[in-house]
Image (cartoon, rainbow, N blue to C red; front, side, top):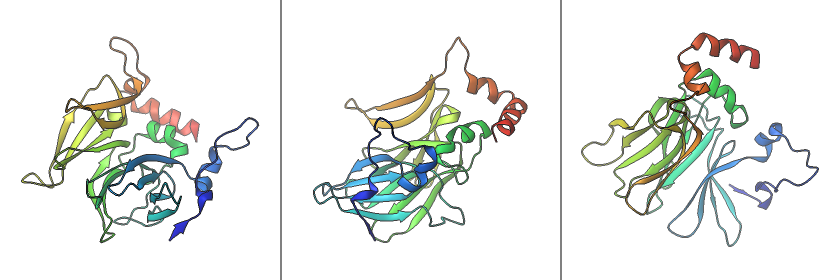
Length: 227
């Protein structure tokens, strides 16, 4: 199945009437990676995984968000990382309940319905590598391709999931209690990783998310008012 050029969302212009309600229709590309043959792999928050040919502008749907994975739908496809040979795509689904346009409600409710998934571009099989994640966001494959890092935004930490070698199938904490709430993860030239922070956790200082995490009854009250 292929999509025409109209899949790409038009840039916002003065006087535009587009709102967040248009996002499920127009789509919202988030993660993007280059494949080994020069094509681009794209994670769209509402539509799923795509492969885009930048020369012909052909857009191919690889995995639709409408496809339930182990009985749960994908409501918020977020970021992706790809193996060097282009066969495996590791990607995050931030929630099976909330969409990207409702990310504040996802943060307020604090649900643990996010997942890290693996898509095989040859067999088209999808596997859940790790579930019960709280707002899984950025994802990055290690240079040796033996583990995948995934940011849990609202938990201010990064998890590590082993995808090959003796530790395959295992998972542990890579780093926690970060100075901000992590978003994307990308490799650095020095062998480490760059981590973008969506919000700083002031220390000393006040952090609304930290404040609410210790007072779930306030969070529930605000959540009900938001709805």
